Every structure is written in C-alpha cells, then in structure tokens.
Amino acid sequence: MPQRYVVVLLTAACTTVCYIERVGFSVAYSLVANRNHVDQATKGWVLSAFYYGYALSQVPGSSAAQQFGGRRVITVAFLAWTALSLLTPANPTSSSLASPALLSLVLIRFLVGATQGFIFPSIHTVLALCIPPHEKSRAVSLTMSGMYLGAGAAMSLMPAVAAADAPWGGPAAVFRLSAGLGLMWVVLWVRLFSKDPPGGGGMGRGSGSISSGDGTPLSPRLPGSKHDLLQDDYLNDSAVGSGGSSGSSCSSGGSGGGSHSSKAIPWGAMMSSWAIWAIVINNYTFHYALYVLMNWLPSYFEQALHTSLQSIGIGKALPYYIMMIFSNVGGVAADFLITSQYLSIAATRKVLNTVGFLIGALALCLMPVLSSVTGAILCSTITLGACAFARAGFSVNHMDIAPRYAGPVMGISNTAGTLAVLWVWQQRG
Image 1 (cartoon, rainbow, N blue to C red):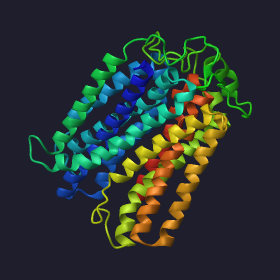
Image 2: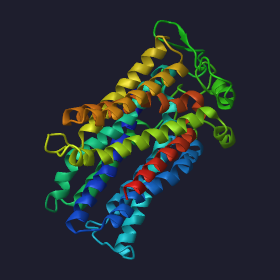
Image 3: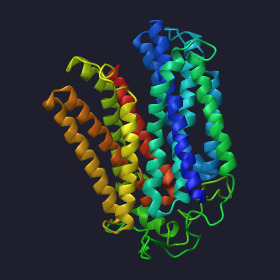
Image 4: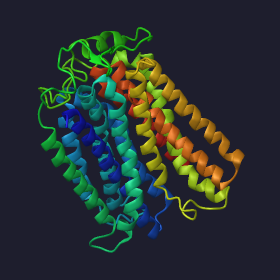
C-alpha cells in the first residue's frame, strides 16, 4: 500500500479516536451528573471547558506543526491528552464551582481540549505534504469523516460502558477506554509513519505535473481565480508542477514530519486574503448549523411532534453515521470533477460548497412545513448529509490556496468553527 494511503487511514483513525474521547466524556459525565442532580450551570462549565481550550490552541498548534513538523506535534499532543484522560476524576459529582474536585475537572477538560486543538491543524500540515492534488478531496473527506464515525461509535457504545458496574464499567472505564485507544493509535502512528517513504505521495519531487488519469497534466493552479496573495506567492513554488513539497513525498521532513518551511508564517497575508475569510465564514456557518441542529432536534421531536427519537428507533448516533457517508461522497465527487476536468479546482469547491449548504438550508426550512415525524426525519437527514457533503468544498480549500501553510489556515478557520460551538453553548444555557 502506498505510504500516503497509510497516512490517510491513520489520520482518519486519529480523528475517530479523538471524537470517541470527546463524546465519550460527555456521555459519561452527563450520566453521573444527572444521577447526582448536578445543576445545568455546572454541567455547562464542565462540558464547555474542552471547547475553550480547543479554540485557544488552534493557531498555536498550527504554528508548532509548521516549525517542528506535523507528525511530531500530533504524536506529542496525542500522548498528552491520553495522559490527561487517565487523570480525569472517576466520579465528578460536585456542584460547587469552588470545589477543588470540580476545578480540577474543568482544568483537565480545558487541557484535553487544548492538546486536541494542536492535532487538527497538524493533520492538514501532514496531508498537504502527502497528498497529490487529484486525491486531496478524498483524503481530507475520509480523514474528517473519522470525526463522525467516532462520535457515532461513542454514542452507540459509551452509554452502556458508563452505566455498567465497576471495574469494567462506569465513568472511569470510559476514560480508560479512551486512553487505551489513544495509546494504541500512537503506537501505530509511530511504527507506520516514522520516516520519509520512498516515492512519496504519488509523484517525485521536482516532477513537472500530475496526470489526471488519462495522461493529461492537471494544473495545480486555481483556474479562473483572482490574484490572491497567498496563491501567487506560495502556491506557485510549493504545489505540484513547481518542484515543491506539497503533495510530493509524504515527508517527515528534517524537523519531524510535515514541516513545509522554516520561513515565518505570513499571518498578515492570510488575514487580508478574501479566500481565507471565505473558508473561515464557511467553517463558522457549518459548525453553528450542525450544533444547533444536533442540540435542538431532540427537543423539536418531543415538543412539536410529541414523540422522541429513541421511541421511533432513531438513536443519537444515526446522524453522525449519515454525515460520515456523505462526507466521503462529497470527496469522491470533488476529485472526479477535478480529474475529469469537468470543472476547475476553484469551481468544484464553490459548487460542492454551495450545493451542500443550499440543499441543507432548504431541507431545514421544509421541516416545519411538513410537520410530521417522517418529514422531520427526512429533512434532518438531508440537512446533515448535505452539510457533510459541503466539506469537500471549504474543508479542502486550505490546501488549494496555501498548500505550504495549510495548517495555519486550518488553525484560523477551525478557531472560528469552535467559536460557533461556544456560541451555541451560550444560547443553550
């Protein structure tokens, strides 16, 4: 198997394990908190602490990956949150914000969020090195679909683990299981991605172009795009066709894997780029819509339709599995349109992003009109699937417009997405 495929599978497993931990904690803590009548304000502090750490660490994480290498940063960050998971109190039941036990729990969740915040920008740094242009959409979509697989798996399995008796069950068992999966992943990551693979990501350094499959060279440029500063200054000398490193070798790099350049990150150019602001706005919109729907949907079924998702055989895990499927459908569709040259790279991103968001919005608007259980299930399924489909647009675009700085661009946009999550938490409270 080519090394780049191994790396993509490992990054998909990485996001899966991260979300098993993230959702698993929420399941376990909510169970214990409800049993002990912990008030909603306290629960909100504990559950949101992760996202505060996550939001604050995205940009520092991307900077670290750029300087020290994405592979190395991912390894250290994974080990850190694994250790913190083992330190999580087994029965965090206190309701007093002044309680040392509760403060330690909030601090641990903040630090888990901070360490996991280093991981996702670093993944983009690694993938930008490993994946040739004609595989970017599928690679990123498969990697990101691991989040939904992990969330769905945690929703399906962790309630039973958390509710079981010790020593094989209970909240502590959930935390140990998450940590164990994390350690297993690190072992695989270090063993299977420890050095520069021969032949690289499907094309050698300095190769003139990449074929679309029929011998036709595929341009790394974004056809029809405006003169974006990042694209003009960095894409030309880093993407395929210019002898750069983007997509060329799945390199561990001289500094630990996935380090594009020792040059200073052009933060000013990024913040003045309309293309990057488009990604930021899309990321914020996606996460806001997703978390509003996921938090509001059970209440809508209970209050407006007088039924529950559980009573009709639809668990909380199903939406995540739907998103996992459609995320990959979008990635395959995007790469097909690009390699077949039906659309330019820029047009493909815009079309998939627009189609996904538009279908999702229309389906959401139809839900109260249909006003039935079947209609609500259909509309919510279409909305979530369409939003996941749209990720083949904005989630891949980091590597199109600034391949050498895909990690920092991801750090900026994912900060915006996490702020959307925190805003939803505030509205919920």
